[in-house]
Image 1 (tube, rainbow, N blue to C red):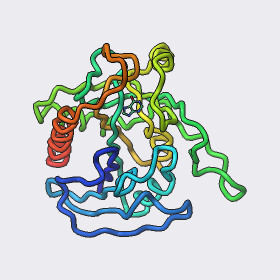
Image 2: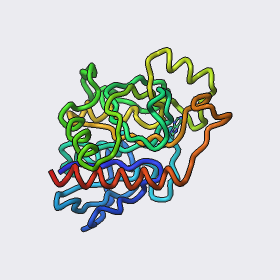
Image 3: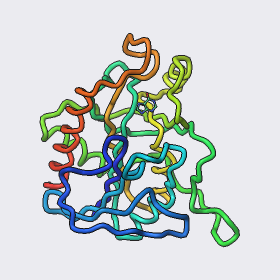
Length: 242
Ligand code: HPA
């Protein structure tokens, strides 16, 4: 069974045939909301809305440890994480789906490891390649099979938020090698690695990052968003039907 973590604008998964919901308690506190179990293209899936049902949790308020622990505890064998991002690289235009291959973490002050406290061993999780190669390949194929023009490589920068970035901050991220920017990719990916859960990220570019795309400020276009959510659903259906 794979888990899907839904991001902004995806508090529910319209393509999921829901069988039941379950509240899960964890040693790390409560997850963002109850887990939803169901079938997608005939396969078992467990879903959680990262920001909670009513989008009540900001990126820095999400209990990433509880979410990952709950999914793992309920038998998830891998995670497809969905998130919206700002586009930095010129081909990362609004409406694109991106499957990033690497991460730079600029977030701070978040609970970012399971390995802390006197009872836990000191563990240095391997993180050279943060995303699972097989899940990434399956996502790329699903995008292609759905006839969508996707971008299949990119470096994801995770900022702390909840505010958006300044234009100078985006230039710094670009110089660092970042192609897209979001606020929730970390510590999620690292926690999945600590649990040895294969993890891949399906990102939807919702806007040009600050100072990019010849716009004076960051703008979200609802028409682009609706089309990309449909692309996302088609991709997920294709992913699970293979
Ligand atoms: N910056 C950070 N996070 C985001 C953005 C952005 O421009 N768009 C969507 N998530």
